[in-house]
Image (cartoon, rainbow, N blue to C red; front, side):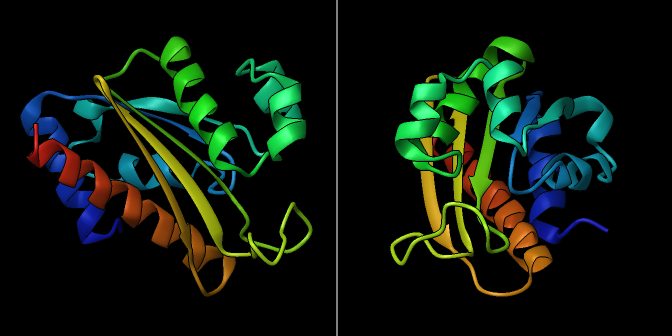
Length: 160
């Protein structure tokens, strides 16, 4: 069952006639999955792409390998690029890209520990970047990221 935040976001999107698409790395499709479980999913969810590995970011989404090498696959810069590249692949009103570190073994550093999540959301002409460090298991981190994305989308739509 999706969280209340995701259910509310889904209802808001449906009510406004807006569609959403996802490019997911750290969350590996969980955001699209959570939104797909909402009663309103058929009217607002366009689809998603899991780009967990850097090669998928490069080969499928067209992210410059130099950008990934310079900033790491889990970075604000790469996440922003994923959102803009997604816009060209899946026609939707809202694009959400997520990267981050849910387990050790990636590009973690003392400044970017495990639990760091980057979200980039495009809504029409708005571009919203989020960096947040979550605590907990990998699943808790992923679900927290999904809720933060939903909450951010609703907050942005309230000001439009």
